[in-house]
Image: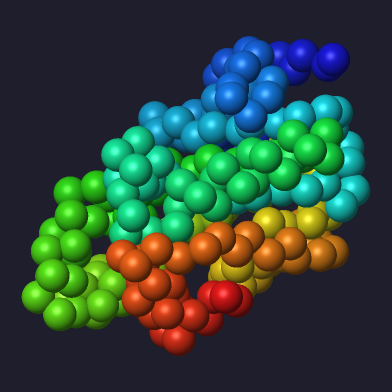
Length: 205
């Protein structure tokens, strides 16, 4: 297995800070930590197999969800989508998950809970973000593109339901050769949330 040396990439925007093996309940992964130089924010890559210089690599770009993934909230599908990707990549033997630290569609945990409070009063997820003065989705996928370029990956099969991810990756110069749907069963708490993602944000559900 190739072990990279830490280095700066993309005009010193991010740094490969550390790397190790990570055994999980889904299987053994390589874990990489990339650090943004200016903010110090750290992002995670989990991978299986040889991911260097690959074409059509299976990739999931996933945004952090503390409430779903740690506290097992049923209000969203984030935890289920992450687990689906972990299982799928282990099954096929080669692939990558880029885990971006941008909680609450980029507005942070505190504001995400403020948005939850507004949803309890009748607003949907998009309306709540807008009421708080944020865009409906404040996430960026620039770091994900930089990470893909670090591994010299020029084309991917993207596990996503979000057209914005596809367009952002392609805008960054990475070809998306295939979209792999990432569909999970809704709960009684997440069904309306998923319907809003479909109707107002164009998610392919």
